[in-house]
Image (cartoon, rainbow, N blue to C red):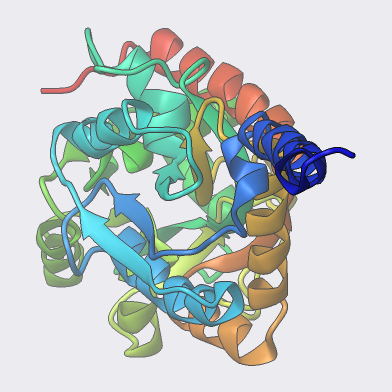
Amino acid sequence: MKSNVYLMAKPLACLGLKLLVAAVAVLSLPAAAQKVWPDRPVRVIVPYAAGQGADVLMRLVGQELGKALGQPVVIENRAGAGGNIGSSAVAKSAPDGYTFLLGTNATNAANEFLYPSLGFNPVTDFDGVAMIGLLPMVIGTSDADFPTNGIAELISRARSKPNTLNVGLPSTTANVVFAQFVKSAQAPLFGVKYKSSAQSMTDVIGGQIPLVIDTVTAARPQIMGGKIRALGITSLKASDMLPGIKPVSEQGVPGFDVVAWDALFAPRGTPQDILQKMSEHLQRVLSQPEMRRKLMDIGVEPLFMGPSQLDVFVKEERNKWGGIIKLADIRIE
């Protein structure tokens, strides 16, 4: 007769073997599969100062996104070098789904053609998550002689008196829009660089310069207050943010389309299921009527694109912005 010790040892050994197999199976799973994402706060680095347009945008979206994720979305500002410092920080972050970048046309399309060194590679260091929105630019004037929707008149005057009409340019984006407009419209205007929208708006309102190119965000309060008038917007189609204002493309410059944009990116290598989940949550947030209204109020035209569509868009934008910058020899001063 076998001892009780032997009879008990056999089933215990089988049980131990099963537990060992189960443990090995769990350990062999990818980290993302072992946990439900997200299980802690998610960080979005905004590579611009607090209070600037990109920061305001991400804080609006982040509040609702946090509700959808079930975890807080923490906004961290890392400004400097035209967005390069914050972008570099994200590029070097762990691709675990807890750090994202609010990227822009500057950080992910233009800066590589403007700076000798970025500290990151916009092509290989990021995965696209979702487009958030477009920021059309406005060509505005304080000159009473220009009619509203007067791009054709502007072109005519520029050609009759080359390089005598001054245009205030308060940003790199404005410089790129200006360069493309001069080329596409064959309108020899003279660009005057400014350090801020406040300075260029002050000068155009005061009559020191007749024209300015800036974002809808900066220009709309002055337009609504009757201090300047919009001649045209730089998006391909008209925008509800400026009802009645025709795009440049419909005023003698067919196909003209140069706009700023904001999108969410992740460090390259972030699990695809996390990218997809984050993208889907953002799509739901951007589809909310109240969120769309809030974005329009700050000059952002909501436009969702998923990861693959965003990647194609950014590739095309790099070619566009890079081509304009090289041809116009635009430099960071």
